[in-house]
Amino acid sequence: MSEPQEPAAQDDNQIIAERRAKLARLRQQGPAYPNDFARTHHAGELQAKYGALDRDEIAAAGVEVKLAGRMMLKRVMGKASFATVADGSGRVQFYVTPEDLGADLYEAFKHWDLGDIVGAEGLLFKTQKGELSIRCRRLRLLVKSLRPLPDKFHGLEDRELRYRQRYVDLMMNEQTRHAFVIRSRAIAAMRAVMVEQGFLEVETPMLQVIPGGAAAKPFITHHNALGIDMFLRIAPELFLKRLVVGGFERVFEINRNFRNEGLSPKHNPEFTMLEFYAAYHDVRWMMDFTEMLLRETALRAAGTAVFTFQGQQIDLGTPFARLTIVEAIRRYAPQYAEAQLADRDFLHATLRAMGSTHAEEAGLGALQLALFEEVAESKLVQPTYIVDYPVEVSPLARASDTRPGVTERFELFITGREMANGFSELNDPEDQAARFAEQVKARQAGDEEAMYYDADYIRALEYGMPPTAGCGVGVDRFVMLLTDAQSIRDVILFPHMRPEEGG
Image (cartoon, rainbow, N blue to C red; front, side, top):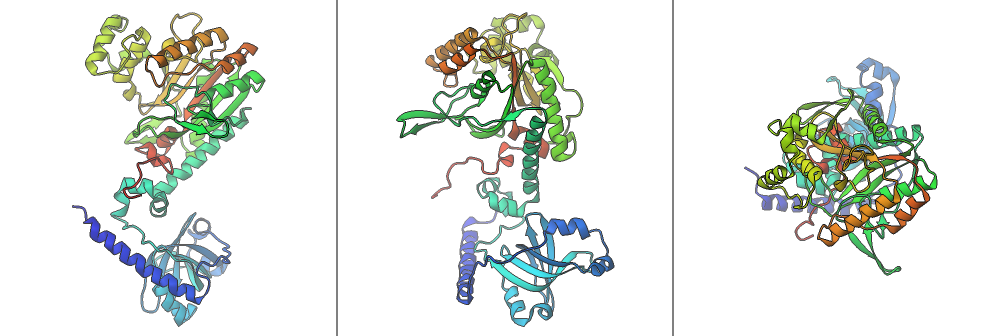
């Protein structure tokens, strides 16, 4: 049974009032938030360098330390007290005595609170229990924490509170800090691999007059000086391909995209993608390259290509499987015969019975894709490329020269989630103009996610875009895999949420 909320709130209010009173007394003594403490060491550095040494070895080294951090634990005793202090790199123990500090400062320390940020100067040593510690000869209160840290066993169980107050989550949860360290390393690794492979990093507009590059409902804003409505970017694709037209033959962008869609464990309205384009390559090269990119990113960010995700082992080190939409359905839902998968009426009736929201006028390829999403997509646990997407759902992909109605496109699935989407780019301006026109018809018929007609992009293609392959990788979802995160909110520092009541 959970504890009553109102008494806990009253307790917090009382604690905050008591801490404010302590702060008021500090102000009477001088600067309450000093800014002149210069540390010389970090906790993680000390643990890495000295943690494995024995007591005599550390004593012989005579390591003088100046370190600051947040007080997470405190044990006050008669003649000696201990505090566990955390900085951005790790934790270390402070050993505090009245003999080292003087009676007055020791007495003051006894009234400092968990969450306070403190700085210490002293000698590194190991306790009899083997705990790396600093014998504090000087100790200062640098920042008074006015709010109590959450209860270790209850306060961190509230996932919504963790998302809203990520700063507290980071203080209290080592797993959270680790996840965002891995995220940072993964993005850095992706960038490094792209640069090493000759790609140029660029930036394209987040505010656009025409939202393009994906089928999605955009966010709308208004530019006062120009007097026009504008859209937050749903994808950078059309601007990146303009750069390929201009002669930048390998470009990439690690970008923030915004889509006005629902929330789910896989979706956040603001998300991060890596999108890249390479001239004179096709979809087959792009699949090989994307596989190499993700494998190398995992190795550099996490030190391994094998991960456990929600109890399942995922291996990025072996070649990724490749299946067509129909092959995937036949493998994971063998009850459907090939003849049935080629029968539009059968597919339409089957999907309608499943409650699918597919369009009534959808063609055979789109119906096959809808059935794949219902019966096979979630079963693609190991890395698998699904290839040969229909033209009608791929308005920017090059059509196959040998197979009518099919594009040179893939989507990569891992753990049942789409991780990447790539294709041989459509560089025929007349074909692209016709596809845009079809998208406009769909929009006029009520499809809010259909694309707009981008006349300037068509003009760019009319100058000539070389044969090109492109791909977009969902960074957030890939980090979910690397960190075994249940929800995309676990790998976004500040996910979007409804405002707090009374906020």
